[in-house]
Amino acid sequence: MSVTAFSYTSFAQQVIFGAGSLARLGEAVARLGWQRVLLCTSGSAQRNGHAAQVQEALGTRLVASYDGVQPHVQDFQVAEALTLAEARQIDAVIGLGGGSPIGMAKAVSRALEEKQTNKPAPATSPITQPPIPVCAIPTTYAGSEMTAVYGITHHTEGTARKVTVNDPRIAPKLVLYDPRLTLALPPELTASSGMNALAHCVEGVYSITRHPLSTAAALEGLRAMVRALPRCYDSPNEIEARTEMQLGSHLAGLALASVAMGLHHGLCHVLGGTVGVPHGIANAIVLPHVMRFNADVCTPELAQVAEAMGIPRSSRDDDTLALEAANSMLELVAELHLPMRLRDVGVKENDLPHLAELAAQSRTVQNNPKPIESAAQIKGLLREMW
Ligand code: NAD
Image (cartoon, rainbow, N blue to C red; front, side):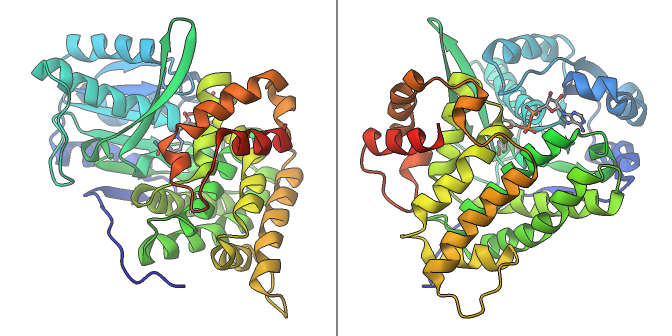
């Protein structure tokens, strides 16, 4: 049944999209009045010259760089970047790279406010402005640039646990997409972060909080990315394919930003935060299984996903289409030569019960449209993926 009542939050963001748009960064930052900017990046942005391009665009407005951002936003790195941000008295922070540097920029924005006010960041309404605004320049398809969320990995007593933080103020105020920055993205990262973006669309389409705009964005994102992703994988330097892929990932991020994700995302967070599975790889392994798991409850929505993926309806009913969407996603994962089983990415069989227990406590997992009854049910699903 189509949605007849809904509620969602959107954010005031300036989005600049297009090949060569990095050249507009300086003018955009000047217009926003940011004078003392911190840049958060990972090693790849240093190696392929993107950090230098940002430096050139910002000139003296760039007062500090935190260069070595590791995956999954590590708490000790946030503390280091915070020290730098305080010492240099920054008034804005840029995340350049994948979801991890962008998440780091959001974490620094929030941590700095807490430090400056000496109290926990308050609950805020969507229209409250941030003390330290965030700018995001994505170089993968992960989608964090559009959202008010980051995951931070806390290390306590020898265990790691990734926790999600949600605050409307950390939604990047300036988002600059330059598909040229994705030309250097290696095939495996292209494929795996592309799977992440596809997952945003799939979970967006059947989300328990979906609304007309999120569904439209998610379906259009799927159409674009199913076409573009194999082309980007096979011909990384093709700017048209890279542009279509980044457009799809923008639409995926737009959907992600305003709806609740479900079981798939909850499992990927646990796999990343607890056993270190790279986020995109976790997405590739988990997505087809969760689509099949959800198919009996989300049948019409997954049938829409199938059609957006290019599967002709012909005389098929929704039940058939929903399962074909899951099969087609699995075929895409194989075509992109991504890992297909948890055992292939270092997860041990005896990790599964603990992972299932953690996942069962996740709010994201509890938001799955098909109710999750127990940790044992999740363990069974993880066993299938293993
Ligand atoms: P990532 O940011 O962890 O980066 C993975 C690797 O890709 C790094 O080694 C990086 O150096 C390299 N890389 C990035 N861009 C590159 C380029 N153009 N060329 C060459 N190498 C490049 O990976 P990701 O998949 O972008 O992001 C995953 C993280 O983001 C996870 O922690 C995930 O939880 C988070 N995430 C958050 C949201 C959100 O809404 N907050 C959404 C999606 C993902």
